[in-house]
Image (cartoon, rainbow, N blue to C red; front, side, top):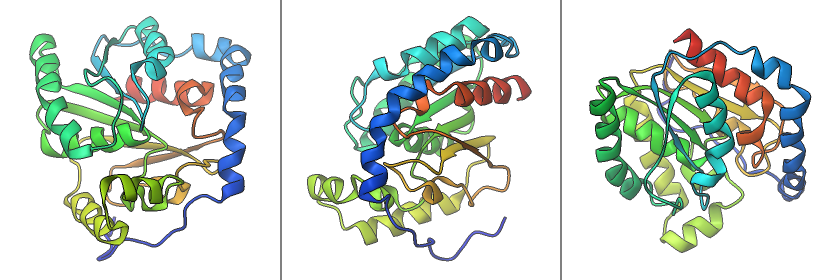
Length: 236
């Protein structure tokens, strides 16, 4: 896959798309409606799976998915940082010992599943530590542009004193280094928080980009997303 010399240019979600995120609770209803399909998912092999929440979210947002994967037979872990504060470099630094500890205690490289900004942290950990990270799966993650093509971009830039255009180039440079492990990006065209185009991984030739239907805030409780994750883990 050809890596562009400069990042592609997109636009953040419209205000209407962001307002439509109120439908997120409807995504959780899909869990009950598609319960038979979820129960028929492949049984896990016990590998360690660590879940990373999105911006301003904490471990509780990942608990439904964590419980589902545990029921399938995976050894699931919460991250140790509490609420996602948005500082990617600091979170990567603080997560590094935990990922290494899980890998050492289980004698297996760790699969990372990240929601939104949690997926950015997961991708950076995979890029920096290929021996301890087995695979990365992200949900609604802003791969291109950092916060630039998100509904919270201007707020994020103000809070962290960022020039979004300059930071976009830094993100592009990191992405262009590439990730060696299997990597999957799950995205939705109905995403009202992150531009779906920015969630498509064009940097890694092995990347799988899987489109689903649903809101950004509901991706972690979306039955279709859960089944995709189950199938991905079973096949890798």
